[in-house]
Length: 257
Ligand code: PGA
Image 1 (spheres, rainbow, N blue to C red):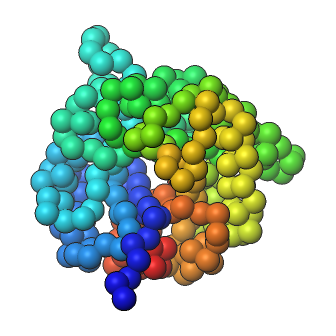
Image 2 (image 1 turned 135 degrees about the vertical axis):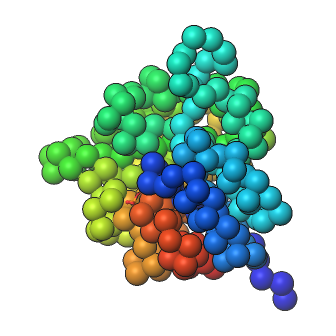
């Protein structure tokens, strides 16, 4: 019997960790490692590397994602990138509101909401909306409230068409890049809260067709199996462990089994 294709998605966030040539080299290595993909795998290089990485990935099953986008289509917005340019390049995904942008570039959820609407209304690109509490919020038992608030501001009132997809990435800020992921049971719980909230706040919530909830924060080949075993997880957003082709392949294969 043919093996069933996984519905899950594993997305690499290269952040600003690689130059142009390094990005090309890593894409070449990944193309070899992922000649058969049992599910969806995507890489998100820096904006300056998107076009070249797209060329390298041609003919492979690996998808391309951007790390950011702007909500306006054209105008005097120095250094920004519009949705249409990402479409022209051939992006399948775009990360919105990563915690590093929220922290260092003061991006807030009103801005993330504008970006999300621009992506959904003007492209077929799948947005990956990042949410997650910081250490202080977690310590003071405010995680659930924070997640609900972030979702409300990013997605509240939104209706998605049958052919539109959104990914919500739950990334506890304190776990990102720390080398220590959260307990898988905690991710399971948070994902449940996220789904219940989306059901409440969205115009039409269709979990099967439209919404995936994925986890990100210090995932590697050692801890991935415990996350892969969770029921309520549709995939992963992987930072550090995605910068090495062999390690990323181990993570993706464990998740997409
Ligand atoms: P990490 O990053 O896997 O290095 O923790 C995840 C992310 O920031 O998306």
